[in-house]
Image (cartoon, rainbow, N blue to C red; front, side, top):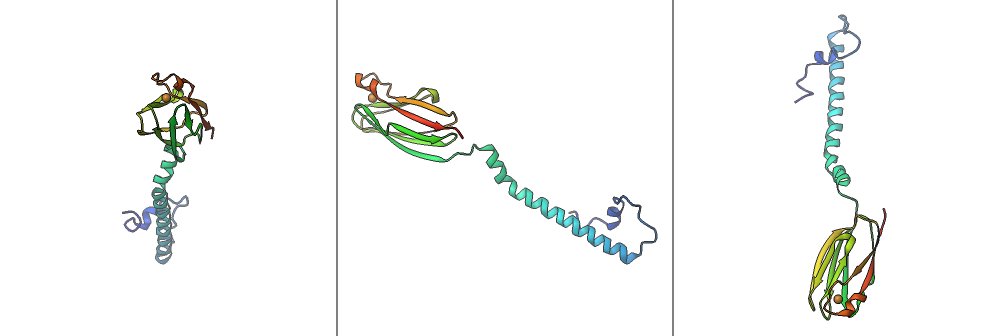
Length: 158
Ligand SMILES: [Cu+2]
């Protein structure tokens, strides 16, 4: 360990001024304590920085986004809601329910195509990393009316 084991004289050689031979022992001792205090202060600061680092890194590495839980239901021939609004980089969790016949929740730009069977709820999540307005629709061909089903996913740019 650093501060207490390092001899004061070793620190004195780091001083830009050469140590005077006339330095009395008591004076040198006092300077040594100041040096130790300074080393401890620096070490404490370093420890504080190291301690706070993981949180800082997490903020940098993870996109700053909020978790959004959205329930969407589908029935002949509508989505409810027909509009979902989130902020860019939000982590969006969708619980998608087909209330009558099978439907799908499809968003081409996000490569999402989730099918729910009659009465079933499927849950999935995605990071809304692309800002813009995207159509969601039902891509099932079982029922012609499904082609009319669509909604809007709005991702507001941060
Ligand atoms: Cu459908």
